[in-house]
Length: 243
Ligand SMILES: Cc1cc2nc3c(=O)[nH]c(=O)nc-3n(C[C@H](O)[C@H](O)[C@H](O)COP(=O)(O)OP(=O)(O)OC[C@H]3O[C@@H](n4cnc5c(N)ncnc54)[C@H](O)[C@@H]3O)c2cc1C
Image (cartoon, rainbow, N blue to C red; front, top):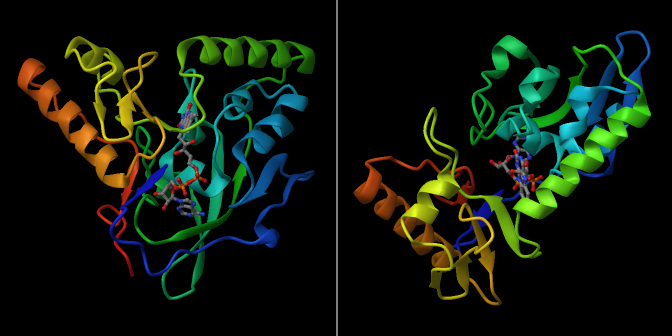
């Protein structure tokens, strides 16, 4: 998710139009081919209806296929890299190339595409698991949705997880909670009571409020536990620049 600066708006934002909102199953290859602007839940449902267990995780993630690939979106032990086959990517010169799994450079919540200025036009995905009964896939999905509802703030104005979970250590939310920052507010931004790795907008939070609260969490966790928290959210213009 991108957090904009309240002081400096980017001069150029590229939006993928209608032609990139289509998704279909390629009968020959068995791949789900989706435009960069297709909502991740729609791709998840396509797989879910066919009993593709490794597509179900996409259903509750807000965002598009292009962002999901760039961020290597994931949940519940699955992520995009486990179903990704290829992507058609356009560079700044307008040239389109096809990138396969090896070229995608997937890492935890990151990829070779993230913040590089390339645009993912469409991508193909395929299950690597034996299909299960779609009714069972649906039950698994509903259990996951219920788990998320119980664990995460029921507040509309938030941007999901702020920091990546440190490799091999306690989750970011646990560290922020143990630093005593749950409920801490700066301006209109508050570290959620329900989940310390989420920041909620209590009304009129600015990009500056969010940045200050993130910096506070990072400095307190570093001071108390010696751990560097790495941002999962993308800051504009710091991370992407404003061409
Ligand atoms: C309530 C909530 C729950 C969430 N749960 C999860 C979760 O469980 N798992 C998870 O992984 N994420 C989760 N997220 C984070 C969020 O859904 C993802 O970051 C999502 O991919 C953002 O999609 P977007 O289309 O809004 O992209 P944006 O926020 O617009 O962009 C995100 C990044 O992707 C890049 N990008 C976007 N489109 C393209 C494209 N076509 N080509 C190249 N780069 C592109 C942007 O440049 C930026 O770097 C959650 C967010 C919220 C608010």
